[in-house]
Amino acid sequence: MTLERGVYANRTLNLRSVQAIGYDMDYTLIHYRTREWERTAFEHATRVLAAGDYPVAGLTFEPDRYLQGLVIDLDLGNLVKATRFGYIIQAQHGTRQLSFDELRTTYNGVNVDLNNPRFRFMNTLFTISESALYAQFVDRLDDGTIPGPLGYDELYRIVSAALDESHTTGALKAEIVADPDRFCDIDPSTAQTLIDQRLAGKRLLLITNSDWSYTKAMMSYAFDRHVPSGSWRDLFDIVVVAAAKPRFFAEVEPVYRVVDGERGLLQPHWGPFKTGEVYHGGCARQVEQSLGLTGAEILYVGDHLFGDVHVTKSALRWRTALIMRELEAEIAAAQVFAGDEAELRRLMTEKAVLEDRLAHARMALLRPGDDAPRESVEALREALRTLDERIVPLARAASELGNPTWGPMMRAGNDKSLFARQVEKYADIYTSRVANLGQRTPFAFLRAARTSLPHDLMPREIAPE
Image (cartoon, rainbow, N blue to C red; front, side, top):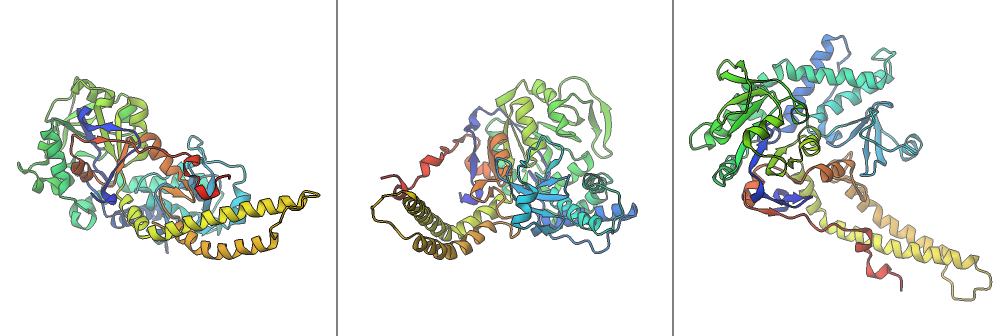
């Protein structure tokens, strides 16, 4: 198994103890070509906005300018990237990057708190189109193309509502169903992964927010040809559509049984879910009661950091797995950069030694009557300037890995990103695709790596003598 296809554990997970595995569908069991899907969503949303008399002429979709894991500052109309501690290290107002001085002035003393309604976490690939549309609308509000008075928070609600409408009206999904090859990137080994899990005695669930007609069409397209029986339905004990996650995991909602698979007719349902049936709505507590399982006996696999992983972990204590296909590109880029990364680390260690020598040299100048040999402060400063000339291009390249504008999804400078911290906190394991679980088998013991502390990494050459 390559590093790109690895399964990474934040908390040790023994798959042998898992009795049931639930799956999300969109961007989990079925991966979409992000550029095609998000471009189409962007275009549908602009049509919705145009119908509301908002100026959309000239809007462009440039996915490389945006990144999963950014945060929108609704007070200021900014997109920001923060460290795991919420410190903002990069920001843009609309589509314009803030300079270092602007960043320092704007966010001095401000930390990103995801519980604060000022900040909106862009935590899935579905938010790429949302970020692109919002940033350009901020520009148009600022230059008067969109008339005010209108706050940046109100502007966000307008953009978000347009994207929601483009999803709920069915036009977007109808376009995908009509040409799935254009939008989908199917991994045929995903079906075998699910088959192996069933052979190992796992009970499988499909729990998706998509409606029955879309779920049926897309699951048939993705799986029927790879399942011996020819039907994706044989992979799952229970199917739940229109689940309304995250409410599905935290609240009690009405449930209906799909009684006509062709027309999607619904019938009110009471009591436990039955094997082989399809349900519309309901709640996770019904799943637990139907299976006779609770908590750590159930693993849920999804791509939405909040709707699939955070709430599931917090409300139910289920085990959780996060799917991040973009992780493959990030790991691949890091591997290509590995030689330069090693050189950058070596130079930074050398810089730390020089900085320490400079600090001692400056201190020696302040001590009266100290006749010990002294290093030249100016010579050390010149050595540091020369060293920085070698460090800067490497550091810049490192900051652009994965995304030329925002850099790596999981890192913010030398620190973990806020997104990485949320993954670490709520996802027991994470990987780039469901099929990777198949490479580890349903009997794997997935061990968390030993975490490091700052003092674990102190190089011997800068340790005190």
